[in-house]
Amino acid sequence: MIPPLDAAAQAAVPADTAAVQPGTDGSEPLHEPCVLLKLGEIVLKGRNRQQFERLLHTNIRSAVRQMGFVTRLWQREGVILLQIGDDCADPEAAADALAERMQDIPGIVQVCRTLRVAKDPDAAAAAAVELTAGRPGSFAVRARRRDKRFAMKSSDLNAYIGTRVQQAHGYRVNLSRPDNTVFVEVDQHEVFVFTEGLPGQGGLPVGMSGRALVLMSGGIDSPVAAYRMIRRGLRCDFLHFSGMPLTGPESVYKAYALVRGLNRFQGRSRLFVVAFGKAQQRLASSGASRLQIVAQRRLMLATGEILANRLGGAALVTGDSLGQVSSQTLTNLTALDDAVSLPILRPLIGWDKTEIMAEARRIRTLAISELPDEDCCTLLTPRRVETRARIEDLRRIEGRLDVGDLAEQLAAAAQEYGPGR
Ligand code: ATP
Ligand code: MG
Image (spheres, rainbow, N blue to C red):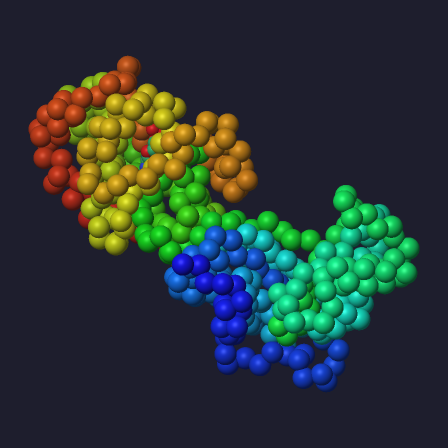
């Protein structure tokens, strides 16, 4: 059952109980730049909600640890408040940097760089006047109360603050299509005033859905697949197969750079690299022929499964998209599923290449993926690739070289890198 929001509000305690909230003792007028985070689906998670919130707090804390200033975190009703420590030399710049960093953390739908002021209509109006200075055009005030006991109703606050902004700057009110909007949120201890909400990643806090191993090529698709799964709360490790020693190390550099780029969404990312060239040659000499590509992919998956079991991963993730290349026909994907017992997650299965490329551009992996390299899959590619691989044929080829043993050896030889360190 979903708990009523009011009960949750009453239970809302600071996540950081050691800290005292500055500015609430009435000594100086409160005027504090900070960041307010809006949570998405996680507020719908019923009784597990606190557990999810705690996971998100942990992820936020580790993301801000390297930022060079102290951040205090408070859980409120459906929102998280981040305050900058008192000893920060430039709290405005720190709040800007913090807001930008929070846009990468899954589980947050909106990031608001806000002013925190006293719980009083005049303080809110003064903040609104300040934030709208130099932003001509029409405007609207949108107030809401998380504390329903606040004396002024939202509509009265809108009118009161709107009048003050109008008097100060002479801007015109337009409630339906304003050029600028002032958001005013009345909370238990204070009022937050801000003029825009930046989009967050949405999704679920990393770790909420468990752990998986991503088969990461240097191509366009697999980093996008990894991102989509990280965003759904899966903590991901990465496995790359290079064609070494038959190719150079370029694809490894690309995989490393891609994992490093994706690391901002989850932190602590690990990359495992397997030199796959000799194993590819062995498959070829066992007569894989038109089945070479599918046989290679089965061996990659089998190796991935061994590694995933070692790392506590409960699934494998690939960038497969139905029908995109000949190894991705439905029959061939079924033959790949047959190679392992772990589930294979394919978040891009129904995506077009143009959609995948747009997402790759948005998450800033596309430029790395497009760098030239010698992909191991282009080694030993048969002239015609089988589009309807038969599982019996694949097993026969694999039987000739004891593929289980080979996968064990490859997994044991995997080299670990720490692009997330
Ligand atoms: P990508 O753009 O991700 O390379 P693709 O369109 O080139 O995908 P394939 O080469 O058939 O398609 O690979 C499909 C999936 O198999 C990849 O998305 C990836 O998950 C996995 N894969 C392919 N090559 C490698 C590799 N060298 N190392 C690890 N995984 C790989
Ligand atoms: Mg590829």
